[in-house]
Amino acid sequence: MIRKSTLIVALAAAMLFVGTSCDTLVTLDKPNVTTEAINAGGTLRLTWTAVTDAASYEITTDDSTFTTTTTSFDVETATGTIEVRAVNGSDKSDPATIDCEVVETLTFEVYGTSDPDTTHRSAFGFNADGTMTAYSITQANYAAMDFYTDDVNFTDITLVNPGDQGWNAKGNATAVATSTVYEDCTLAPPPGTYLTQQSLANGGVYYLWLDRTNNGWDATDNYAKAKVVSIQGPLVTMKVGYQKIAGLRWLAN
Picture 1 (tube, rainbow, N blue to C red):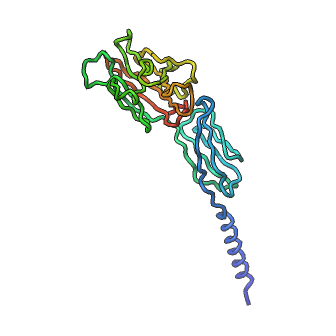
Picture 2: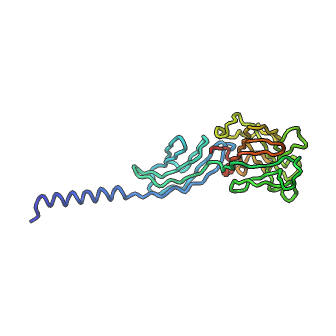
Picture 3: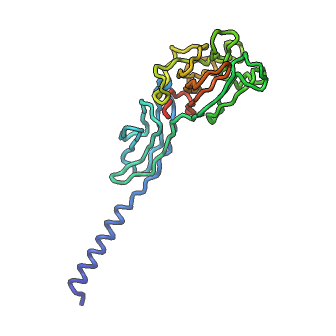
């Protein structure tokens, strides 16, 4: 005969087992998120396929959390990181992480065209991974050059779009930031306030718009910011941050 106390213990264990199995029944996959810059680069649209058993999705930025039951969401404020999780009650998936921080070059040197040293480079361009490369101004380098510094045809050292010289059809341009604090410059302005030739000042911060096809803004463009650390004769030393996500004007770091 089963004692009453033994029966109670067995029932309690069974209930514990059932409760535990219910808690772990839902295993949510991490969302597979794609991104698209819209609103002239001021907004990042996130899209993902529906996750099995997900009741909603949680989107977390540097300073906010949002919830949606759809499979897309527009983030309208510049942020360094975005996380997207599938949610069902207390269950949450691992986050899909979108890295929106700039790729930062702590210091980069480029020389004005007056410099007589042939080993010094007056042009630079950004690689696909966001790193910078200095180039000599030769026809073989025209396609890779995004800007060059000219102190021969201008009174001051001036950042110039190579397209102005007919060196490939580029509309790259520059805008002066309202702040000289590099870290505070987190959103480049939309097209309309940029110049293809910009005089550089010591300590100034500038937004760089890379319109390499010279067709106005589209999702193949890139944006960057540059702080002039020093100007010593023809030598310009800059701190630069580059946004890898195509078309996006966010420059958080």
